[in-house]
Length: 60
Image (cartoon, rainbow, N blue to C red; front, side, top):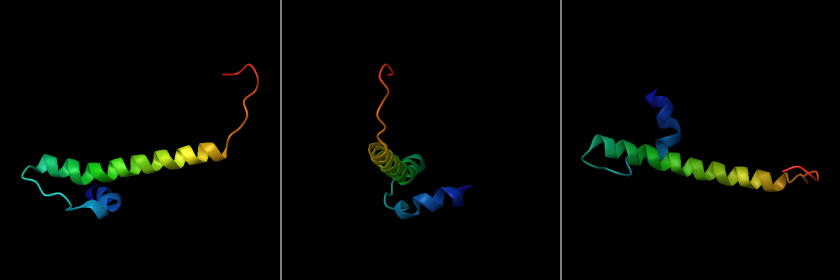
């Protein structure tokens, strides 16, 4: 399981060093998670903009 988690977060491992294990995990795993969330949101917004389909009258 750790290998699976290390693959997408490999670029950020060891950026932050703290005394607490929990803080280190949150920073070293949370940074890539937040980055991928923002990246995915940007890609979805771009795809939505490219695929604008006019709505039918009377539908919300």
